[in-house]
Image (cartoon, helix red, strand yellow):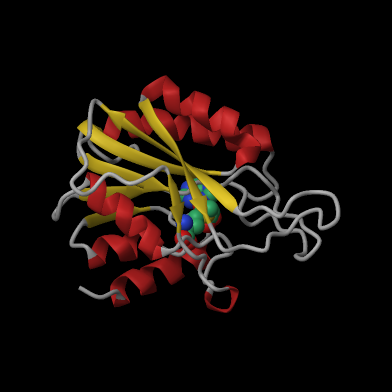
Length: 211
Ligand SMILES: C[S@@+](CC[C@H](N)C(=O)[O-])C[C@H]1O[C@@H](n2cnc3c(N)ncnc32)[C@H](O)[C@@H]1O
């Protein structure tokens, strides 16, 4: 991100690592979605802190950013967000999920949060929506990334706070869902991905996207 000039980005839409190890009763332990293999939560937090400072630097004035987050580290993400931006909403994505985790001792998780805010002030291009949005998850059989987000949900955010020809940044792009949505909606896209395998998947998806 250091290569991106100051004040050159029209919108950030990103889904950073949630700083968890994704162990559950259904899935084997995995460290793939931590920022760096064998990393600690503290190092992951440092990476997120640095990235928020860079978001502030690269965004133009009067733009919006959306950052996905789970409830586990919402306090940390909210604090970092508010160091740099005006937090306008914590949007709830209500998904058709049966959930995982403690199958006998915890309620089945059915939502994720999205921190939404402004650098300056960003005006909606489309109709105002409620802060609880219902969109189905990508079906498990079709998932290219374990935390892949539905394009239909990302489309709402892109259409509400950016224009055709805008440049959108997703520094944690996973399988490239934000890039695919951008291409379909005639936005330019800059994305990063640490994992080579997901980077190749993202590249293929974006190159093959409609437009
Ligand atoms: C929650 S996932 C994003 C999934 C994405 N929204 C999708 O639909 O496929 C976060 C991604 O960030 C990547 N990542 C973690 N640390 C990174 C870093 N420092 N730079 C770039 N990518 C990183 C992980 O490999 C992971 O694929």
